[in-house]
Image 1 (cartoon, rainbow, N blue to C red):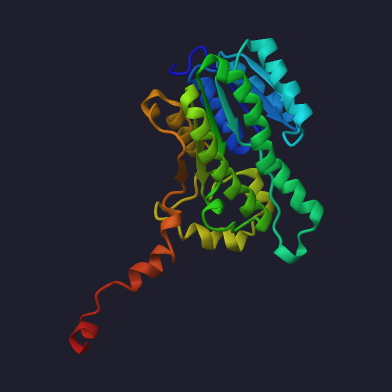
Image 2: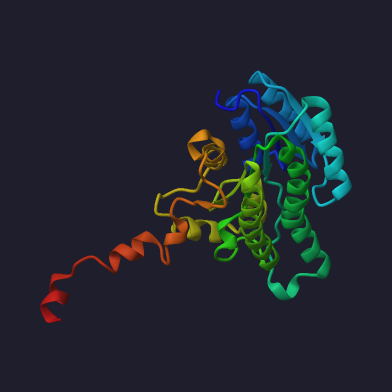
Length: 270
């Protein structure tokens, strides 16, 4: 129970990667504030956390609104007394070409995926700094290092911003005993991907994964636990790719191997 006695807040924790992270933290001993905009699913996740023997507080809030974030942090301190861990996971996406993104679309994706990370982090810092301890883990994406396959330009821009914000916060907060890191999930079987992903594209992109399968939400949650553990006590400012090697590939493995298999006849004539 490595996180025994610690309090964690996970945004977007009602399904997918966020839910898996909340349950993993509870399994490791943490009490968990479960944020989401879907009250019913947030309460369901809270039930699962309590079944693991930990305290849970479901809290509905739009992380892109500073007043909503402040109220959520106030409730965290009221119910649990302090905050040790913040996992910024809440995110949304759309599938469209850049010229079709309206100003409203752009602002909404940036507001949730990037501004929400800033607002929650800013509020958490105010609780962590006086105690000179704390951990922040941001859920970015390999889209922030390449481009988004299933999303669009605003999603790519937001996730690149999350990676940059992670580095900056790690630099500022290191002297105060607060570590800040990010994970960059690759292809992961989540409700969001099922909603916006094209089945044909999903199949073709999965062929690019050297480990041969899409990630599960638990794969991502385990990476978060690793970064939160004492074994990573000297790690801060990293954006850890949790993608099965997907960023390594510029073509699918089958084609790669076919183009490199030795052809004796070709060798003889070369």
